[in-house]
Image 1 (cartoon, one colour):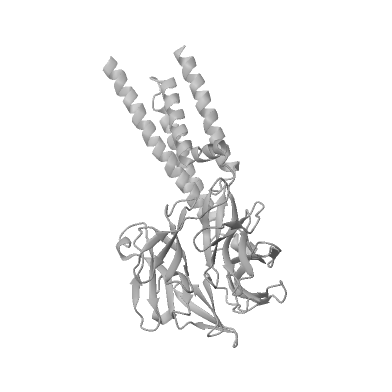
Image 2 (image 1 turned 90 degrees about the horizontal axis):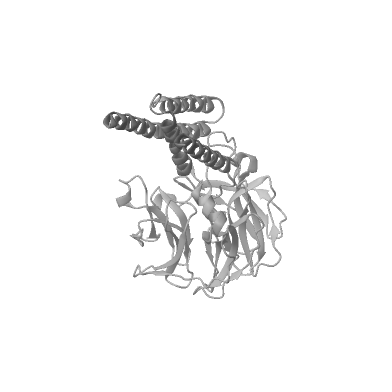
Length: 429
């Protein structure tokens, strides 16, 4: 009877293991599928009266606007199985642009009236857009783009990079402005004073001259540290804000990114935050002496969870901005619980329990046999990782190698369990 109970338990655990593996392989493993909370990207209108942001509601990410104090929140985009993010206001306050990311992680460029009406797609499916910015007259949009098929390739396989493009607000007159294949093209800034587009490519801060139609090293490059991120410019203050790795976190495996401010006239720098996390999307208020930003509170976890905060440039006083969000869709609790409970740890636990039960079933005659079978599976997986890395994709090979490491770790536990059973048998005798 005892053997029958063990066999029945083995069958149940084996079924749960196969179901979990199938769910991991075939299921939609998007971390944001049931997420509710702030998304990436912020914008402030020219008159400081409104802010724009993206917000997830049970896995659907739309663009919202609100008053400066977080009230009067309105949804201004309607995503359909895509994620909307990275909003920007036009200088005249009449238009808004944003990026729409599909399931393949390809991002397209959209514009709409500031109230969300008349949405218009400006880029086609052959382009992957990483960032965009309005011109000072609100008639032109400048954006960074690379071929969509290239963005889907693994690192090291891509043959083309990002370049700068422009398009009129009505979608006409699209032009490719550079042909340099930049590896990254981040923190796009339109400088009305110098008639240039400033952008980052790794540690370089470059500029594209709109009159001479050429790329050169920006004047900002020599005035700032090399390893800056989320760069933004305030022409009114002749100052920049950016994030950078905090000095005290450089000794740790997990870098923390704090917010810094720099006066471009006298070169004076100061640190504005000490949040021990990652600060992203800083935006200057044009009339207020503050910066609006997102604090990535579960850095570097997924889905990314943000709080919206402001910091005073003089006092460094931090305040959290509460958004008066409209009624949101209820979360699918059951599916969310299943999605979060089925993961690599679940599979590892079920795999270990399965072989432990088999060990109990064959005990005492062949107590170590299941452990040796598991060891063989682990070794074969290591060989498979080498073959995959050499013939298919190095990153896929690393993934298979991590699987092999997990199998071998479970095998060690199984050997310890089998050895314990054997000692128990001897003690009973």
